[in-house]
Length: 94
Image (cartoon, rainbow, N blue to C red):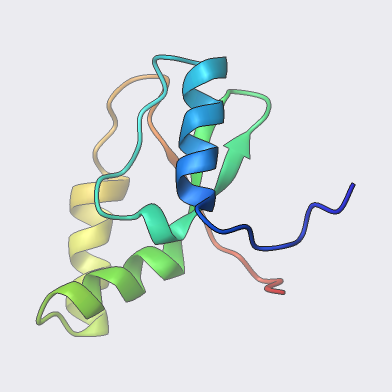
């Protein structure tokens, strides 16, 4: 099975599958395009942190520096329990 291909509607597919596996899993509002997949150990949503920054800059008047500060305080710093989404730095992009 090929796992490294982009599928149309993939954020919805990931959300639906994760919600089925873990109905308490949380998602980061506004960052659907940065959703990478599911952490299969903790069954939580996993997002591309750099893509989240890109989204913030595209949807607001923020510079990269402002987006990083906002993201660190309001997203990375927003622990909402054991099902809080995880944000990762991706180095190998296809």
